Amino acid sequence: MSLAAMVTATAPKTRSRSKKTPRVPNPLTIAVGQNLQRIRKASGKTQVMLAFEAEVERSRISKLECGYINPSLLTLGSICYCLGTTLSVLFEGITETFPPSTKGGPLRRSNQAVLEKAPSKVNRRPLT
Image (cartoon, rainbow, N blue to C red; front, side):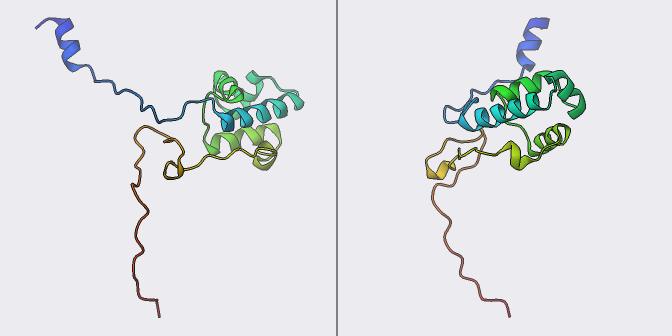
């Protein structure tokens, strides 16, 4: 068997992205990014300085500010700490929300489990 045939035979199959999965940037990630950029500039820090202090890649700060990625809460907490601010200030003025898929919103990720209908109530005895 040739090397090309072996690589083709062992290469993982790629899955196509679900069309229902939201793309970023979206209004929520853009709003957080704009607030982050405003706070960073007000603190007098460059993206490089902030990235070094928060222990993330500089490109990640850029992507956050442009709304291209959905950061974790811990990442945002570290960034806020380095900027001398709080999460409440970072989210100040943001009124965007994101409905769950059962309420008409898009899936948040391609492998997300979705309930077809609301779960039925379970009849339980009260604890005594």
